[in-house]
Length: 199
Image (tube, rainbow, N blue to C red; front, side, top):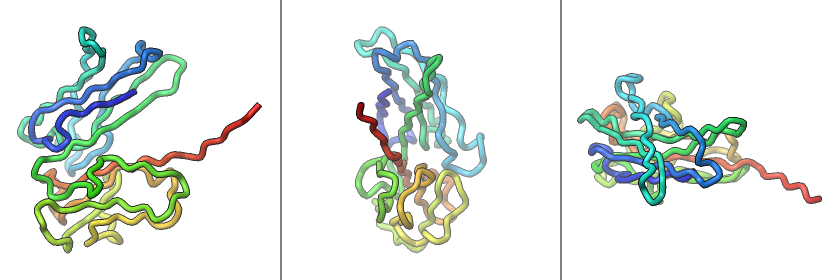
């Protein structure tokens, strides 16, 4: 499955993302979801996206999700599609939408970072387009409480070799400003070991 997001850096405006299935998987059922809460307040501040709409008349049929911000930053966060087919494993893929006036953005200008299990010296680095200092920076992972060991730094350093449990959504925000939806978001993907058998 391939996901295409329109307007990554305009979550305050209405937007959409599209999920494309490969030919063998066209019969799969596709649903939309919010990957993780990115603001406090539970479902009221982190509503699920609308259901997917199948676009069959397009040259490239796909499932479309239209996000309505409703003036409440409801289009801010990490969203995705899940494809399900009887007898097959589920496939999930996510995308990130941030505000155009975000306090932080990924320094590598990418919304995802992919590493291998056991990689070392991995960090997630943000920069501030507004130029604010780093004293008030706070980090969270997967809607956790603030990770105090990483406070005050624009780089989240993951100690030791990377494990599968390090995968997730990392947030960089100013202290006490999480609900303003101006934090930087980055998805860390961790590839596991691959084992090959030659016959």
